[in-house]
Length: 394
Image: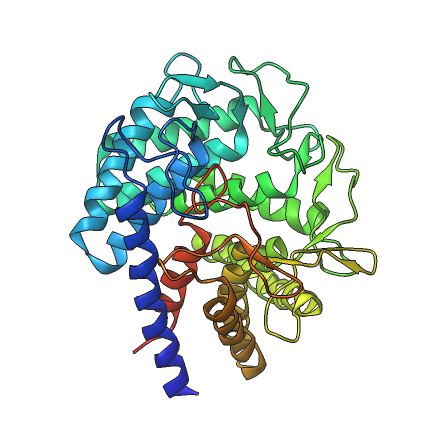
């Protein structure tokens, strides 16, 4: 097992380099600044595609985290590029928060305030501050935290409202994407606020921030995690009434380790012990979504699986199953983690270094899907590699 773990670590390190080399070679917009908004499956760039705040924040986080762990100077340069563009074009200097998209020239396009996007900017700015202690990056992250707390936190029932107009008024369409339900509270936004606040706490040990992390963990244990089957409920109204029955295996396994990371960040032993136990229960529930080939199905509703395997749940499975192995010592979880990686290498990894969007039930590549876009970023896959590298000791 020890030899295999070291092999896994070595393979993850090589994979990280290949993924980030793709983004360095293909995604940099040398004409209009920042990074291109879209690269299709054939690596053809759309130089006039809108640029998304989530994509740019995730690029900033990825290259900052990669530099923080590897000290590769090219990653620092690309992190600096992402920081400069994000702060110059996406931050709304009049009302606070972030624009959802800007056009290819960097002008505001969709100006709605999606809290999910604001959370990712906090996540990214906090990581960038770690590599150079830039005061402005920390202040920017702290200000965005205040924006979320002022406008999105719902004190009566706890939790966070998903979206607003540019000037923080109510908005009819709160969805992150067309496939989502139009509900006021979502698991996805809460998970990534928690992720962002955890990273912010790493550079700013503020008591209010700590209390908010505890609130968020409690929202998961009280409302979001289904106590009957340990899967996550995806959508709610403002009163925490469930509004969906779909199981998202990728979000389940991602939450299993992000919740634990948050508990460990605030160093609360009672919460850590509670979440470690819950993390294993969530992980065991996810095993139902692992196919015979080692890949993780995307979703399930009732007894029906969505017969696609997208790139990002496989990346989260690498980390989540390894986390379960580290918590329990049970080698079945390590085998599940490594099988996820073997599945990725066989079916998801593209020869150019990036990962395909996903595969269909017959293992053929899903066509017409971007290599880079509003939702296709170097975040899940790079982070999985970084986590494997960090968690497996020499």
